[in-house]
Image (cartoon, rainbow, N blue to C red; front, side):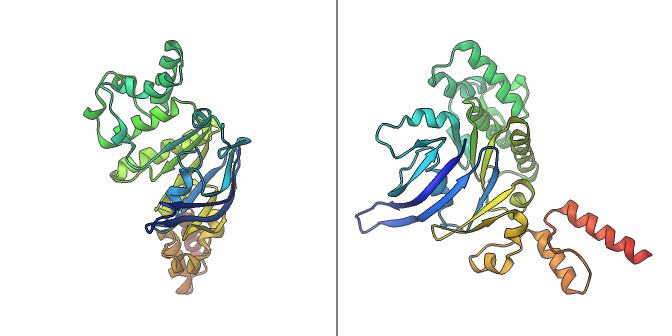
Length: 285
């Protein structure tokens, strides 16, 4: 299922003195099965953009096409679209409200008219997908840790059986362990479930190690896009719009500046470790 964004512009409170242009003629395509990262400074339009992907916002101009369905059409069935494109915003645990974890996860499928037996199957499957045990299903979600609540909220979206999962800062506010667990499960979901994942993040490290393509936003426009290696190679361009490159990229560049013969397209700690070991091995010869 592809998502096509064609010349989309969006203005908040149009026609008023408070009008703000959030998107300016944005065009992009996300293919079925991709893992795409969206980065950009605060106010660049990232969150506004992803709210267009399942019709939560309608373009001021331009159009969004999801699996051949034009979301701007007058009689479009947005309920159908939202079954396929699940959006998870920052702090989704704030949307938990049922008395048990089971009921919270079951809420979405139940609203879609799914039968009880199928709901039960989906709840058990979704809770396993986010790495929680069945024993939490009878508990109140508010008895859980912050990271567990976040995973319950994600499970509620997964129970809707989306083919595309949009996550806006899914690890925001979590401690390092909770952050690693959430992102690990998102990576596994993409690998195992043929799920298209769109990740909005301020963490260059997370984007570098998880996604296959990066879209850089600035001032409501697509600044540039490419693979993580292509994007993070443009350190000066990123710095100009207020973004950093991953710390490991900064490290290898400093080593290079000191005259060490090291690759500068390294993105992850594992890659840096292998490269440093290669250099030490060569020096020892």
